[in-house]
Image 1 (cartoon, rainbow, N blue to C red):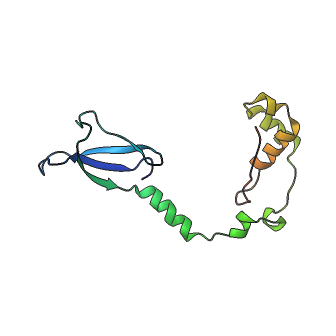
Image 2 (image 1 turned 120 degrees about the horizontal axis):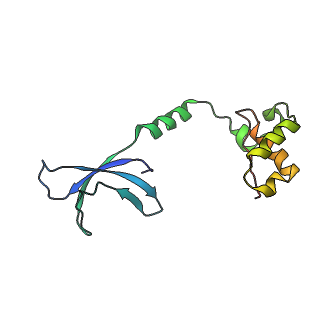
Image 3 (image 1 turned 180 degrees about the vertical axis):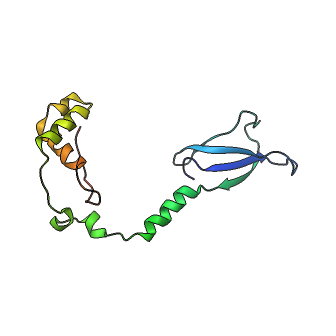
Length: 135
């Protein structure tokens, strides 16, 4: 289950015409799932419930789209110079624009960090991902 998935629940032993209550997954931890139901669902700790899971279509659709597209493992896992295209440093205007949007003043006053952020922010889509370490 993932956040946003829905499920229908009713108290076990209810008659077939009893109402099903729909709840949604709000968080998922290792062995715990947080669900939320309407306040009219009267559940007492220890009661058994009948449950129907409903998988969301959107995540499955995204998974299928990802499988249909070609994936270049080398470009992502072991990029080389040919995967980056022409690398040009950001212009002073781009760096100044980045400076105005930075929340952390320590970074805004650090020209090398601003230049790195501008270079990453202005990369064309499809370039290899960056691994960033720092503040």
